[in-house]
Length: 223
Image (cartoon, rainbow, N blue to C red; front, side, top):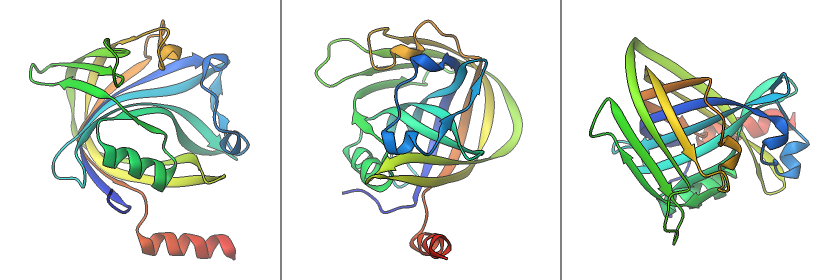
C-alpha cells in the first residue's frame, strides 16, 4: 500500500538543467503529446535531471532519480516526467496509480557523508553495473528559504493528470558531473553538460491535492 494524496515529503535534491536537441528527447505518451508541447529555444528543450533523497519526517523516505521535460499547455508551464526510478515499492505504486508517474525500481548509492561532495549511482535490478552516476560538489549557500511551485502533467487512464506541487527549500550553488551510459535509459543526456545545477536543500513538499481540493477542482471543470 501507499499513502493517499497529498504526500508531504522532506529531503534533499540535486538538480541539473540541460538543453537537449528536441529530436533526442524520449517520446511523450500520445494523450499527453496531444495536450502539451515542449518549451523550445533554438531547437533545444529544457530537461531537468535530479537525484533526490526523501528523508524521515515525510510520509515516505526513499531515493529517486528522475528526468523531466519542461512543457507548456496553451501557454501554461508544466513539467512532464519521462524517466524515473525509486528504491521504494510504495513510492512506485503510489506514483503510478495516483498521478501517472512512470516509476521503476532501482538500487541507489547517494552518499552525502563527505560534504561538500555527494556521490550518486543507480543500478537497474539484476544489472551488474550502474547505468548512471554523478558527482555533486556543493558550493555557496544562498541566504533564506525559497518557495517552490509547479504543476506535473502526466498521462493516466487515457487522460492528462495535472498535479500541483508546492513547498519551500534552501538553495546552494552546485557543480554536477553527470555520467549517464550512452546506451542506457538516460542516454539522451550523454555528451551534454548542464547549463545550471543547484542543490535544493532541506525542502518540504506537498505533492498532490487533498480530497476537498480535488472535489473543488471537479466542480470548476463541470461548470
